[in-house]
Each structure stands twice: as structure tokens, then as C-alpha cells.
Image (cartoon, rainbow, N blue to C red; front, side, top):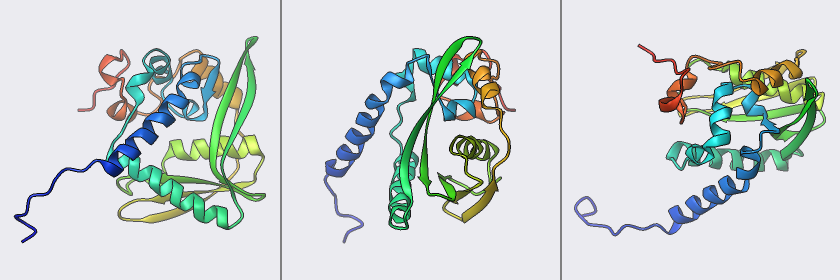
Length: 208
């Protein structure tokens, strides 16, 4: 019966999800186009990607199932951690001066308490876990907040994996300088495959 029945299209929930994603994007648009602001995610990514984002920020807006699912997982797990005494969605700013030029590094940790920082990641597969750029991101947070260790947790269709990560010394100024002077492009060979600016990028790596 149901296999042959025709159903009407509905956008009651989808419209709400889309509007929320669009409003969040617009809210961060001012910072995303401010050359004096560098996100932590910029520090672990291709520096040319940030250059393109400053000029063409609209190309970074995404409304796809994988991103919606990732956001829902974050919201759900953060609520659980909040009940366990963690502060969630904690934003921070840190001023860094490179060659007399001051920039503001901005970031947001998923969850934090007096002992740990927890970073939540979703992925389509469990190959290659933990990913190096995620470890690098967590190290930045550990150094900024002066925590001795953090937890990197992955939620994928095939695995729930949790990694204990001890803080290591990190040269934040050098990372900021790489981004400011656009000297690392790409930072990882796989980045071009997922980059919204790949088709206009002179540094694109074409995988055979």
C-alpha cells in the first residue's frame, strides 16, 4: 500500500533547519570577512582558503545532510556534557602581534571543565582516525586554555572512537604568521578535494 502511495512534498522542518543555518552564517559573516580576525580553523587549514573566504564568503555556505547531521550530533552530545558539568560552546579571543601587526585569534571549544577540553567530530568514515588537523586544533585549544589534556571523540556510522590527547608545546605565533602571509597552500594534500574554492585556486592539487 505505502510503496505505491504518492506523498505530498513538505518543507515544514527543512525550512526551519535551513533558516537556522542561514542565520548562523549571516551572523558570522562580518568576522569571516575581517582580515584582522583569524579563526583557529584557519590555523589548521590551507592559508589560501582564508584569502578566498575574505573575498568570496558566500561560497562557504553549506546546507547539506552531512553538515546538518554533524550539527545535530554536536548539539546532542554537548547537552549531555552540560548535564555532566561541562561548559559548552565556549568562545575565546586572543590577541597576537606579528611584525607590528595585531590580529585576533578566535575560536570556540565544544566542551570544557577544570580538567579537560572535549572536541567533538563527526565523519562519514572511520578511516585514518584520529586526523592530524583535528589533533592540531585540539592542541591549540589546550595551549590557549592551559589544560593538560583533552578528549577528541569521533562519531561515525561505523565507530565511536575516543582519544586522550596530552598537551604539547605549540608555537601559536608561527601558525598565525603562516596564515597572515599566506605561506601554506595547501596544508594537507586532501584539502583541495573538499574546498569550495578549488576550481579557482592556483595552488590546487589534482589527485590522480
